[in-house]
Length: 213
Image 1 (cartoon, rainbow, N blue to C red):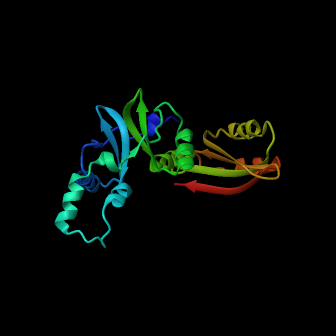
Image 2: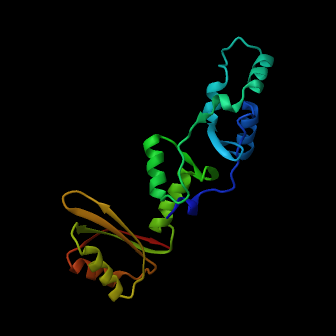
């Protein structure tokens, strides 16, 4: 699955010449925590509510309310934004986006194509895609099967499901230790008793069964 399939394209942005109050108002109104900063159609930075908090004088300051308001109204986003943010291509895989976020400690990535901002992708998008990929919300049965980590196991299991006319909708493999792996196979049926018996007759172990109705 690609970034372009899950990114948000209806992007709210801000100019580097806008002020801190401008950014705060946009974030509050739209219930968002960060804004891509765009100038002449190109991404030049990212500003977050944390950036704004850091740029706001401490409550312990001796400045008056009027002085604080004046300072904030004069502070441009270009002064507090993160410049040269990490970006990703719309044609990258979601796994690449997840690794970039994880390795760099960020919760969203601007999506840039030929220098132009075309979307954003967030941790929530990645989580939703992970759930969708595993079919966790789909109706049917998910069997988690413990197997030896050997060639041909997946083909053999798929053959068992095929013999019983079960359509496999989702597959995930979790590599374990000591030569074992857990294979999660999702099908649309709830009638899995015969399938389970045959799986176990071949020496495989069903370690978890989940049915969504």
